[in-house]
Length: 190
Image 1: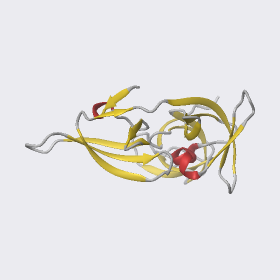
Image 2: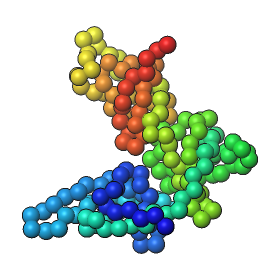
Image 3: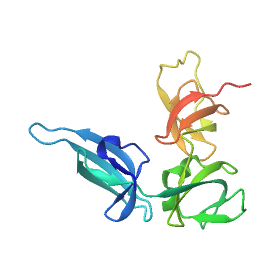
Image 4: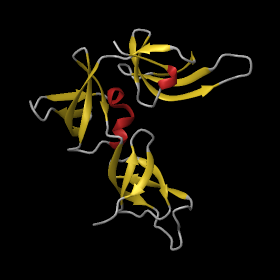
């Protein structure tokens, strides 16, 4: 069984803690004078979706769960939840809101994603690090806006709203970091 410690934490890391699987949402190393270093974290329980903040001693070790990953296609979302299909076997899997988590903000129909299995059960969805999405609604850009200027909200084709630079217009395709939900760059039109 693989093991990691707090010095190797990153957003999205899955760890076993208190007999359950948790995903690291946020982490911060801090050192207070005359005390041992502490890692402050925000963790999400993969199964229940509950989120809690925990502090760990620097260097504390955790087991990594034996998670199986399988590529699947996102089909659609309805009142029951999110539906995915295995492209090889055509078997379909349903997920509730908690299992999909933050990934729901950037899911687009027919998109290929990674489904996580633990002991034969589906436990979550992993998106690619970046996705290209179209801006469907934002305030118009003003002549003279520069790359280093301010930012404005933009609604994406998936329904998510993120902050983008002032020069982005409705209809532009942009690259978004799915881990942080931040704008990376505008995709050049061909």
